[in-house]
Length: 318
Image (tube, rainbow, N blue to C red; front, side, top):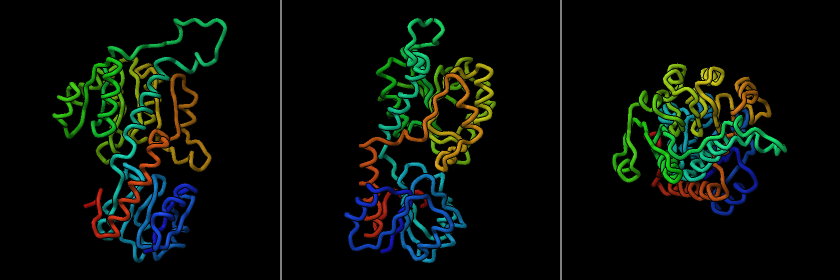
């Protein structure tokens, strides 16, 4: 079987070459483009990461393609309907990085809470009253999305003594009993939370879920953390809310236009946010740790092998 891998480095090439012997493997460092797709028109399977956009234009390049494995939990970079029409199975990795993303969520939150922007400067004399440092204990944390990552965030938050409320279109009553939190409406969560953290997939329903109307419902001085997908937040509305003081601080691992980082550029949104005080931007790295990277390799290999055996798993476009 001929399989093309995109967005891969030395480690991925060595791992898959070692564990998929007997198959013809082609590796590309870059994300997929129509021009690169032309080089592997006859592939039977395709393995990609989040910056490879799979749409009708790309799919038309392939005559034999039957399977796509994305090395990610999210799959908003793939046109599911186009894949389904073409008879292509798509699988993802539902549980490879929940610990890394949850920990990164708190890395961002703690950096904001302790104001590491100013304290890192190690000034001889500093007016602590101007640092806007706050504790997490006793704060109301609103968790939007209570899947594997959201659940792990709640577990960590409990250790800080935070009060948890959550919103999800599919409520997990067993989880709420186990971790002692309450589900509320989105409006109630926005109104009552001191800190809001986002852990949802990007869909038509969640795109700009946090928009100007949502910001206007928030407490003045709220903190926003986003480690899900950039387009879940209307970035222009976020910038306005930072300027008005509705949002006092934001920790963002994802942002609209983040693809420009991959091209060595900065989008206008990124440039605007970099100039704001009390905003931390990280370049979509919450998913990564040594451990999660290894699990990515193992779980992707498992998905590919099971497809080859005719027993595909983790299918998202049934």
